[in-house]
Length: 59
Length: 222
Image (cartoon, rainbow over all chains, first blue to last red; front, side, top):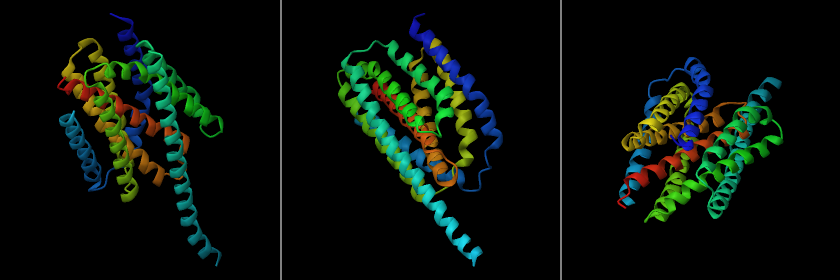
């Protein structure tokens, strides 16, 4: 195993350890979505997916 | 009379504060993106070794976790933001060099760069014009990021290109969600800090760019 792999693994592991308490807190404290909220978020993200597919076809 | 004055003045003051945070965030973001691109160009010019990416990213993470929270409310926070973005830009050098050495590398890098810009401007424009509150996405986005990191950790050992492609696609979707979430925080959170907002948006842009590079590199005909 080369040093790049070991380094990447250490960096990602550090990110997981650092992010875990934040994610746990966010899951507990985030406000509930109101009806229609998710639709308002998913539509632009789907537009991004479509745009990325267009870029893939172009390159 | 006082009560009337207060009720009229408060929303106006809040709107001014929101506009100030948005203006400061985008000004600082533009400056840091320019500085980051400059550092990436320097790194490409000096043909930095691949380990540069990891070391720069590690240094930037340390600054983000341990220095930025203490300096975000002071003038030195600006210096820390430039140090973080400069390091991350410098770390991009070896990756850009690898993609630029491909037969259609210039096109891949150019498309990823332009595509990232379009995605960021489109999502920010959407969040700013609709003024929707995306704070409900916070838990989902952070939990999703954890899952992606665990997947990425596993793929270091599995080395599956299809899985790597899937991770990049999910990262783009999650970072798009983070752009909506952060932009809405600037509008709806009274005490949002433009230094922290800049770093958060910069990270989303950086991750979208890297993931787009990976997707376009893997799916390219050449």
